[in-house]
Image (tube, rainbow, N blue to C red; front, top):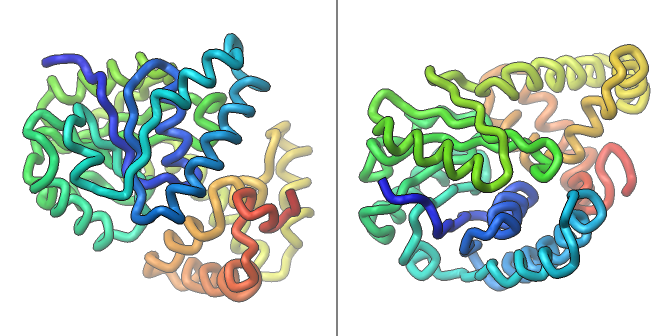
Length: 284
């Protein structure tokens, strides 16, 4: 199988923009797609901020290298144009099952036959989506952690229908874009990372809703007692409260539904979306 050289990322939110910039920083030709010019304007701001973050935090990230990364990035609101020459398409749209399925229906018609499709979904299994891709043998999950330049894992998880050569090609792509591939050989909701992380976040939400302690106290307890650099509500802010809301509201669990409503009333309706908006459980 030919190597992956041309990447398209669908969705330029917090993580989508990081995925695109990380690949561009490592020399890949990247097209970033989003639904309209307003979204793309926000993406341009994110890419500019990421260039500064890389210069400050990534070894060898000189001004020239980050400028080259920006030059490797192309933005478009035309889905057909975005995927016209893609070797790999990474989908990073909101965690809504029907939205993702609709995206894959469109991709199946527009993308070239050579293109591999990968979902960055943190909560859905690739099997939830494969029948909508038109190419289940060339489809899998490629899941990134936030702050991709530092927490640089890439969890690769296929379905029973994923071609092993496709799996291997995506593992190589992850490694070549500065990531540590985590090869998952059996479908598991939450992969490895979120299978460990989500119970912590759910427990923190439960403590808050039960009135046991406020977010800052819960975070302080976790940081001091475990030595972790961040607490669960700081993690919620980094992930983004809209993403947390979408995941919680999609769950049949009553506690998750209650937390979704809490986020909506106390934060999202007030424009407090986490780090991206400058305020969530904390101010930034």
